[in-house]
Image (cartoon, helix red, strand yellow):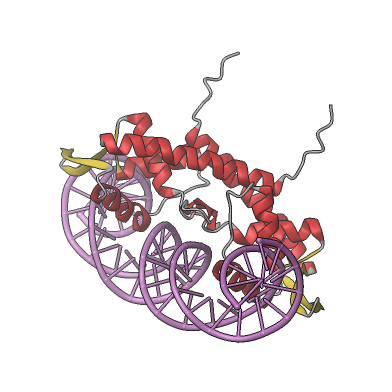
Length: 113
Length: 113
DNA sequence: TGGTTATGTATAAGAATCTTATGTATATTT
DNA sequence: AAATATACATAAGATTCTTATACATAACCA
């Protein structure tokens, strides 16, 4: 994930948002999608991604479905019902986070009327 | 820091930005400032703050100056020259991070004019 | 006047998340 | 034939944080 530590803690939210948007995705597809959307700035490593997917599955937020395409295995993940509800919360937390960080970095735009 | 993991990795940037803005601050003051700006949403714990300050000092990004006020010790921190330069980088990284997260969460706002 | 809260700094144990390195396997491109 | 792309997986270690504890003074309240 580049060298910035800022992305720490945001991977779960990213995964869940992408699944909410795309229905179902497999791990490698997620890495490529993120790379594309961020124009190469954010590269999710497998060492971070797969454990994260397994944990979300263990928590009951994701369901998995294995397919074989071109003789290669794919594990498609999708949000469970519980996962869909939790995604709403995570996205809300992300909005709060971004708002708070902007308040800290971009203090009082000199509210002039 | 509330329960959200999203803030992980952002503490150094927050500290440095506040010091850039306010010249010099002491630990407790930083916690109160952050609490105020975020309206109580972000509470920096001492267990996170003090080790972070010590590390930034060890890296040569902060200078420390001890004062005694009302018979209580205060350690005022300020950015070194190197710290000022690094703050610019960190803030730039934060902007990239926020932009990338918004791209991921708020995909193509259906550009309608 | 005694107890709680606020001010102020500090560290240690453990949790959570990530990087880096490695491993396995097939398909495609050069 | 070799390198790259596709696809998943895990283990060791680094980093950052939470939680708990510790010490000390000042201020407020009952």
